[in-house]
Image (tube, rainbow, N blue to C red):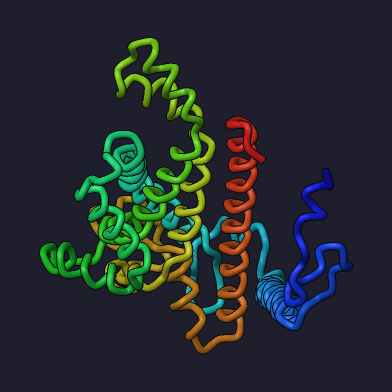
Length: 309
């Protein structure tokens, strides 16, 4: 009895399976398109890095001559003298108070979306859409809203109003980053807590949050770095203050800040004022860069802790 292969005769229109593979026109077209997209994407990435390097080089070259010990330790003094000590301290106070408001709400929102809301929860879907909308909202609109709610009611601009505006800007980023990090926590930790009969809130506080602490801190640092450089909302709700006075009480009056210092100083009719504005921009750039590097280090440690690359 002959083999099964002898009982079948290949039709002339069918390809020969034993013939060597050759690239068809469709395969060549897809290869060209793939390589073209790869080249365009690589060129775009290089262009983005080049723009960042150009901005950093410009700020460093123009701001470095203005840096000195007195520039960091003295208050502004007229058009041609002083430094940014009060603006630096004011920025720290405003951003710190904003973080104090936004961090608990953002982290608790991320916990709710990850640990307590069901996959078909209507409230969770509405909350996610609201966070996405708030994250893409122009910051000047946030400033206008805070102006209508707080400044118009109190009839004065204060650092507190600026902190509220920055907290609103920070909130969606903290909530979304917390949600993503909590999602990456291995499910075996939750299953182990359930097997031991641990209540859900105790499992979240004692097991899940410690495992995701590094990632949550990363999102918080990135949101703080973004808020520290915002100018538009402060221009609306915290622009009236004494530029030569150190004001750390945010509820009574306006508080100096580095973004507002740069905005107001750059328009002064004095070359030394422009140089000081570049110096303040360099200080802000270095602070934001340090925050981003620190966030990346924390993220790498958090991913390694959770067994991820």
